[in-house]
Length: 576
Image 1 (cartoon, helix red, strand yellow):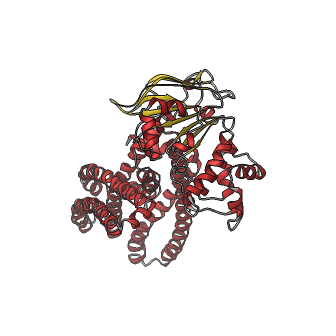
Image 2 (cartoon, helix red, strand yellow):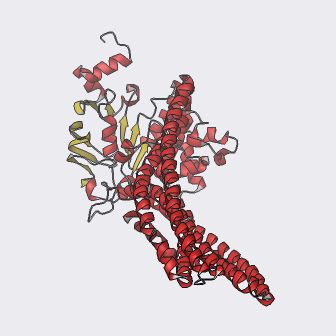
């Protein structure tokens, strides 16, 4: 229950509302406890003594009790729901902030759907634990305690018989609770798998339809859904066994009460009204025990989600500003890699002893086979990953000695696949610099050769482009990404195969925009088409994590090595 205690810490800002909620719950429960006493008075004082005045008071009391109960029931429901919703908002915010701080390595290892499941399915289970289960726990707990007190007041000997069964009930709840919690973990994992599968299938719907794999994807979903069904039914089986077990133990206790209470009434040691009231409280005692057993089972299932949530919150954040890190001052753009090595997986080098020296304003190109390590170099400069050996410096300052935010603020990236947000064109470009004016956004779009097509959209710059910008062409999305980078105005620019997925006409337009963007900036270009880097100041040929060759286009052709081979393949030279 350690994590549940941690979860309760989120309630601290709302202690005032919690106190009022508990008062409302107790008063509402007290109204329920008064009703058996009315029955006692009805039998002992009205029916036996023919007391009409008491009958009148009892009728008035019933109306008042239910009126008061209604007011306080509303109070408890509203206040506890308010607290639960506020806590859920806070937990979601903590988790979202956590994911924003996590390094790229985390997202390489975890599916998007799995990450989404934490904030949706798991947090929803926590909401149940805090709201529904908390209300029922306090309500039934109040009735349980109140019933016990009144039972002792009515007849302490009968009360002792009742209490004998409580340890047995507690042991049953403990045994079933452990099993329910373990199964709850399985259920949450199955839901995460379903969410991941849904995210994959829907985001790749074009691929699914192009390969006519609708039935295949449906079969995958059915299998995963069946696994979730099996886990859910296991939970139903356990909770369904827990409730009748508790009820059976409670029934044994009630049987003893009926026999012994009847014996006392026959011997005039107890009134008939008191026995009926006692039996009512005993039933009231049995019902809370039964309901609390159900609450306990649901709580154990929810605890599996709580454990998953805190497992995420407790994840280490390896990339962070080290002690004494200072903001990176405005740079000129000199970048140096000095014997850099890196591994994504331990023991499997992705880069080995890579060195380069880029002067401010130079264009540095990386070419080589797929998986050679080109993108890895681009990912290390903004510290998306931490290097294993060597150093990377900008203007002579090791990038590990400066704050990550100040480093990345001065680096612009135009990826191969542009990701746009489901908002307006204006806001997508403004993402490059949030304080930019509309006029600055438009100027950036003009510089990126994007202004014309944007103005032809239905609402121009106010057009909402839809999820991931899929209703725009690849060239249009890339020009918006370039406009975003222009607006940011970075000193260092990384172009990760920015034109490789475009048709020839779109490539020319985008390349013209990129040429404008690179002027005066230190640019690192990962090239698929060699024609885009003929004018690069330095070209580094990467293969299997090593720098095989480097020089200008003409120098590399003269070496007649890997670069020359790649050039001849692309341009269909006879000596291939």
